[in-house]
Length: 335
Image (cartoon, rainbow, N blue to C red):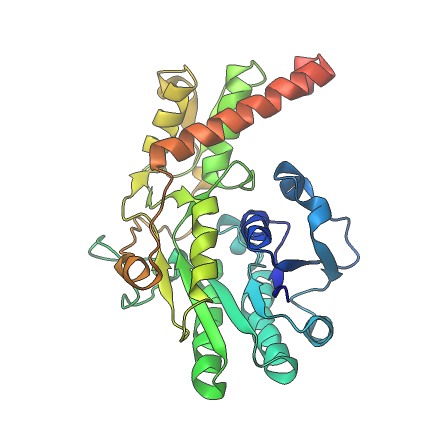
C-alpha cells in the first residue's frame, strides 16, 4: 500500500519541493491549506504539482481542525512546514507568529498522540533559533539557542515541544534544524528572492534601484530542493533524532547581491543597491553557518547545488518571469 503523508504549509516554498519528492517515492500526499481563504497555488503550479495532491482544510491556530485531519487521514508521516516564516515581520506579528509556529505545533502533536500515535512527525526547526553566536563559528546540534526575533523564539518553543513529545510519549518526532534554503519559488519578501526579483526588474527596465537592509549579515544558503530530501531521510531512520542541515559555508547578503548582479550582466551592483535602515531588524543575527556532520554521517545527506548554482538558478527564473510578463502585457509601465 502507498504511504500517506500530510504536509502542512503545502503552498509555501518547501511544501511543493517536498511534495514533488514524496510523489517520486509513490506516496499519497495530502496538503493542508487554510480554510476560508483563496489559496495561491502558484508555487505548486510552478512545479506542475497542483492536480497531483489531495487538499484538506485546516488551520494551525484551530486545534479542532487538526484533530479532524489526523483522525480522518491517519497519515504515516506528518511534515509540519506551516509557519509565519518571515523573520522581519515577526516583530509586528509576534502574537500571530507565536500562535502558528509554537502553539500550533502543540495542537498538531496532541492530535497525533490522540488519533495516530504511530505516525512519524517532522518539525521544521530553523537556524534562527541559534541567533546570536558570540564566536561567529559553526552551529551544530549541541550549540545553545539564543534567538533574536519573535520568529526564532516561537521556533525554539516548537523544537523543544517536539523533543518533549518524543521523550514523554514515545512518539517518533524529529526536528530538522535547517539553515537558510532558497529557490525560484522563495517568497518575494525574503532577501534572496528580493534581490533576484529586483535584478530582473532592473535588467528589463522596470525599475532602477534595489533597497536592502543589512548587507553584511552572513548566512549559510542552500537549495530547498536538496533540503527536502533530508526531511524525508530523518523519518526513515530506526530511531527519531534531530539534525542540523546546511552547507557549511556562509556568504554575506552583499556577496549574494554582487554575484547575482554580475551574472545578470550588471557588473557594478553598487549602482543599483541602496542599504535602507527601514529594512534592518531591531535585533540582528550577524552570522550563521552549519556544521552538518551528523546529517552526513547518519542520513548520508550532503547538498548537491552550490551557492553559485543557486544564485544563477534564481536569477534565471526571475528574468524569465518578467520576460514572459512583458510578452503578455507589452507595457513596461505595468511593472
